[in-house]
Length: 103
Image (cartoon, rainbow, N blue to C red; front, side, top):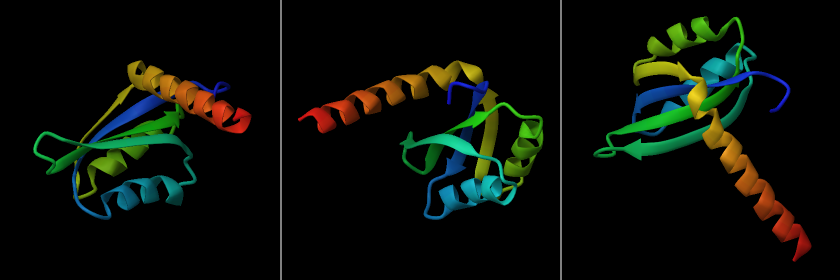
């Protein structure tokens, strides 16, 4: 994760089975790697917010336009500010992994 500039795609979607597969399938079909995923329901749980950590790439604008065409996607924005959340999670997960291996 440390060798490339990253950004987070913040995607507000309809919360029902299969939406994550539609979103990630879009990336898979275009051989665009997703480094990390965070997804939680929001508000009344009828919607979810997906954060995808991705490499900044010349294709990113096109990916965002394609996502906006998906029926269950309400909003897509990009923000480099949220990358710290993933760095913090990676630190916690690394720490947990080290503790598991030690004990």
